[in-house]
Length: 260
Image 1 (cartoon, helix red, strand yellow):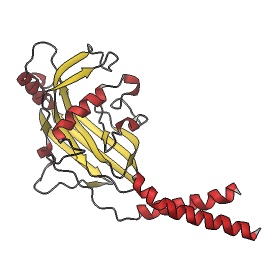
Image 2 (cartoon, helix red, strand yellow):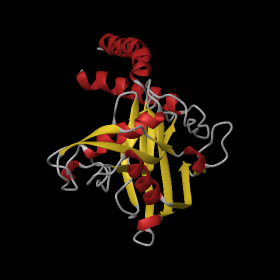
Image 3 (tube, one colour):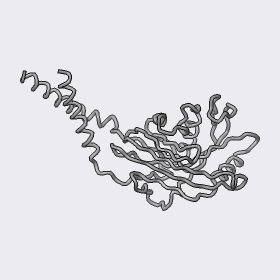
Image 4 (tube, helix red, strand yellow):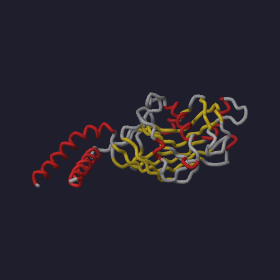
């Protein structure tokens, strides 16, 4: 009896998911840099993002993760962090998100805190030089360039900088930095993207910049990150489908009982 009951429910659930996924997929829209997300400005989100990824040790660090095994750590409720990496090695990660979550893409966010007596102006100058000269950057969703909001013509217009904020560096941090709480700033390119329609998607971004000032010629900032994304319906969608699934399952069970 249980097998007969489960089969129609599984089939109905699959059909419901296919119906939700059948909605035409529109080109994905980036949110304007001044758009609020979960009640926060995106410049404030730079600080939240920096504190988030720096709070994990190397073993579970989302920025060191080569496959997406720790990608669930990016789930922050109303929004989801999709981090880049600490080097230019191309990476492909798998991740599951909800269709109602705003996604934050970390193309290149520089976090700077003092190791001597640097002032806030010094920290901002360091961040600016580390980011340096932008050579190229791109964001594609399912192979198509992400759409820019009205009034924007280039991804370069999305650069933001946080206010000075207290950065907590934990004792088991992945860089082996002295633990403590430091005044810090975050500067760079993190893009907010509207939620993906239910189904499977691929997000890829690339970034290439050359540091300037005292860091000129020492390294190149490179990113080539691909996320294979499974977007699942928000809980309210399944709740709206649940009564119908239960009724149809009950009818199937009743018919089986009559046949016996």
